[in-house]
Image 1 (tube, rainbow, N blue to C red):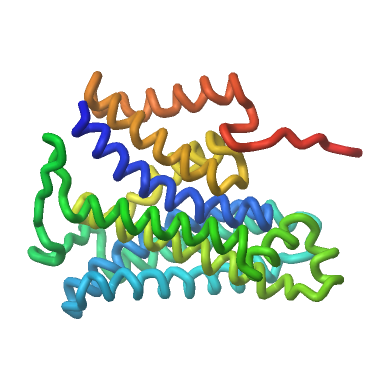
Image 2: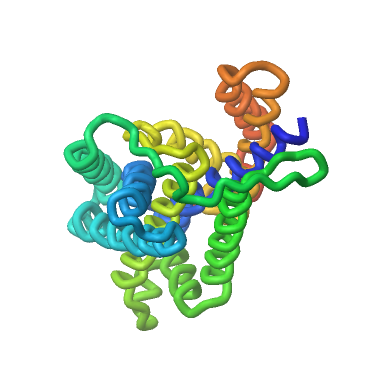
Length: 292
């Protein structure tokens, strides 16, 4: 049981990292970015490729994947969202445009890597096992948990205390007013996409490290889980996404322990429904009155 809870904690940390990138764009810009799962997948393939083909240190690759994710976010914002800014159907058109961007990215991945899964070469990461109170934890799992926590806390600090974070919150509150007081809204928007996509690509790299491989469909399953996490945590809430990611990861692990792995999706989404019945705004969300 304790072993499964530990495994659920590591998986939940990846869910949370993926979801906070997702909810960052929605919470600040009110854009639903459906290319996030494709960038997650691209981060996983790129990370394995850099280790397997170029023989780079995996610690250097972590940094390169973050940079590559940020660049993909900038391209996404430029190609799929900025041309639509100001249109009456901006949000819906952006959603469709992001689907197209994600489809193109997945097609490029297939053209580059084929349909077979990519796997980390032997020895890419130290295969050490640590025993803590009878629980077996690999060094890779500890690294995943540590990096996920560092990135989540760094993002929370950036949004709450840095000048960039203050600009982000001003844009989230009222883009027109933010522009009037001198905030470069386009720059903040591009920075938000870059940050979100960097976290998504990093989450993909960590997921590949957790399971030892990457495949083109890996983004679809975590995309559904990402939706569940941001709804459960409260739309636009970074702390809620972190907590909900861990809750869903632990729920899946307990389901595997008590029932069967085929039930983990059923139980995870059943928990989601129950919590939303009791608290429709999510765990950390707030009810907002709509004024007409």
